Length: 99
Image (tube, rainbow, N blue to C red; front, side, top):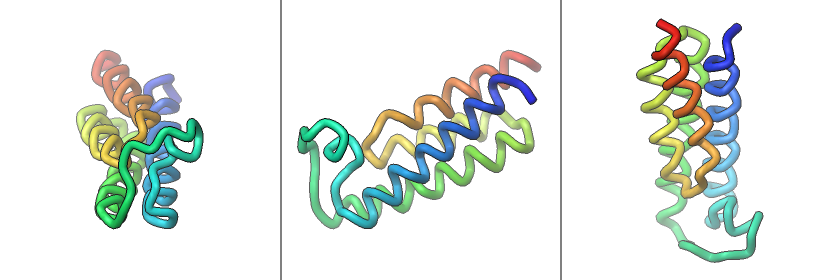
């Protein structure tokens, strides 16, 4: 297993976690970590769901070793809003560079 795959898995998992936190608490994970309130409310249910789907995409395509779709999953994970899914984008880029 390559470094790009590991980063894709980790970034996808973090996107799933941030998506679930956004859905369940209607506050982004960054608010829980830093105390800075960027956005609140029911819009985070939708963005959290999109981030959850993006995390699943990043994990699945990390397994399949398709870097472009890992990048897309990482970008969808950014909608949570938390920047931790950038790790999946970096992993997808590394997968593209390996081929």
